[in-house]
Image 1 (cartoon, rainbow, N blue to C red):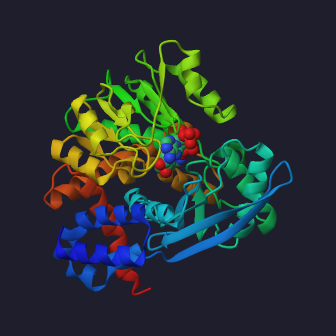
Image 2: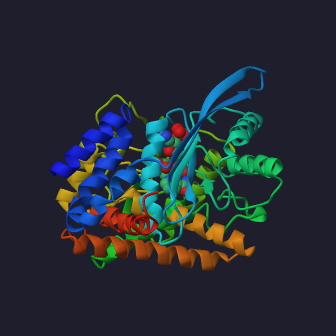
Length: 453
Ligand code: NDP
């Protein structure tokens, strides 16, 4: 670690105590940028990185709501407006009991670079609540969303800050959030993305993050003149990103053999085909069940409960070619990375945000496998959110093929920008450095142009 990065990290840790995920995200970026900041003293003089690390605004609020029994609950709501140098704040809302300020700051920080990589005019933000939608009725989720938006609506707007979904926030929640926003503001605007198709949503938005992570993997494989045809893939999670990752891997001739949730994972060596995927979509999106039910239904599969206190996750200890972590942060540690490499995995494309620990990333980089970090590989979701904003502004909708082609083009551009930046700064095919550097430069130059604000 250079002296500059060491000093910066000491300040970040002192100022942002008890936010380990935020420290982790900043350290990874700062290490990649050390060489850029050496070449460009003007960025250092203008304290560009120090300013990017400090959110432009943090909003934290009380969210009281009533359950079906008439009991009152109090959750905490957040919106981190991280950086608006290149466009309105943009980033998802996460509803999960693990949500806290540090987790949302890490996500908002990553979002700044990710949104810049898409080449669309979007700043970075993130928000959410420690509310747990699991086990709640639709009415309870609606009352919570209404209470949450009653405060959040003061701070967002189609030209200011445009939230979307993330863990625990899908089409149902976006609908409830949009409905109450429209009622309070008395305006029908593109203030949220991920909207329903018949009220301003974009085709391919639900698919975009998963599809994009697969396109990114295909682009990485292309550098070795290979494709996904015939490849065996591990997928974690079983929500939005995992489901559409499987769909696109099937389209491109590969086979996915795992899915998980916070209880454990299923392993289906025969592969998750389209019929089985339709079962998963109904199970998770409509019936809101657990992934263990997959193994009850399909005898080719086994279910393994995962003990989070163990030092490795057996999901990552299965023979395969590719891995698409699509659940949550830090789900692959150093031991898991060893297991992936030992089992022949040589492509890791991150659908989730920061799913690999720094130890795991070091192992991928040392082994020179094709590793696409989340801020590049999962940027397809926010990219199509950007396209949804454009369609809302034009009051016009593009066809499925048009949006998918644009998504494919954006993922290729992101891939190529990462390769070019990593090459230019002396670490060829290091997608971590490439994504951090390419994402940073556009934001940094905009901040230089706009003065000390
Ligand atoms: P969903 O809520 O649809 O699904 C999340 C899945 O991950 C569920 O299967 C959930 O299991 C599992 N999961 C969540 N938290 C944990 C945990 N602590 N331990 C183990 N499993 C967990 O979310 P998404 O699919 O939208 O998001 C998944 C990842 O992709 C997140 O990292 C998100 O930030 C990232 N992402 C999402 C984008 C999007 O467009 N939706 C865009 C870019 C990134 P369970 O049901 O048991 O909680």
